[in-house]
Length: 118
Image (tube, rainbow, N blue to C red; front, top):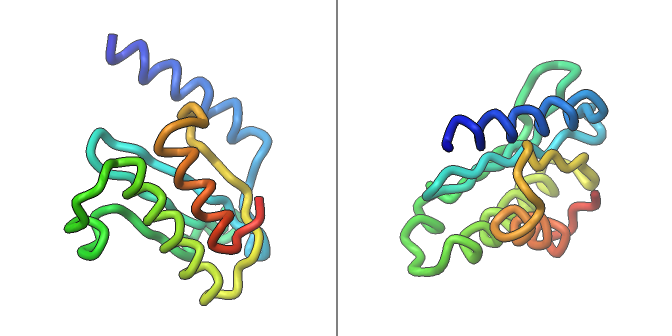
């Protein structure tokens, strides 16, 4: 069962990554969701560099006694603040093969509230 899910997610991921790519002006916002944590990176695919990254393993987010969706929202706000500090206003959202609901959706909504446009 797990291999079937991973295979399905990788197929979706390849299909999406064919069409989207990050640039220095508009980087790709890639989300990775594990069972416990959530990670997000703003990636410039032309240079192959990560410009900004945030995760729920940061000390202030990790120690909060909240649900996983609320932690994802905290990560979304954190990445939006870091992106603004780096001079990034708009991004291309890469959900990385995950369905757009739950933690992925709450992260995206919080990043939009924080000032990122995508």
